[in-house]
Length: 83
Image 1 (cartoon, rainbow, N blue to C red):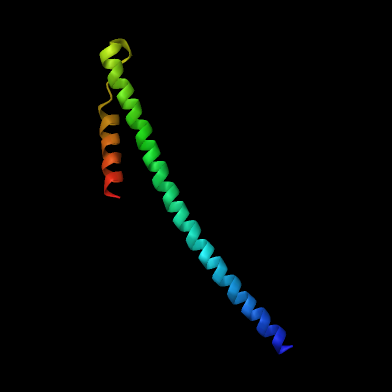
Image 2 (cartoon, rainbow, N blue to C red):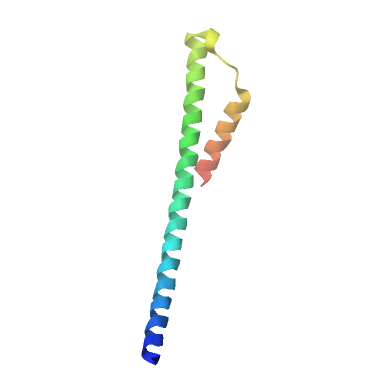
């Protein structure tokens, strides 16, 4: 009986250790995913700004003045460069 309890206790400890390791792995993966999504969003915003700038030159009627968007993208790029 005590052997069974000891075996179950050892199994629980091993399971707790496995869960803790998996949790740490998932937290790391989540941080990488968040960084990737932030970079992706900034890249998409930058492409929109570039497209708008090209529209200013080639098709002036499609150009939309976006000073706030430009400042937001630049701030995002600076944030990504720091991290």
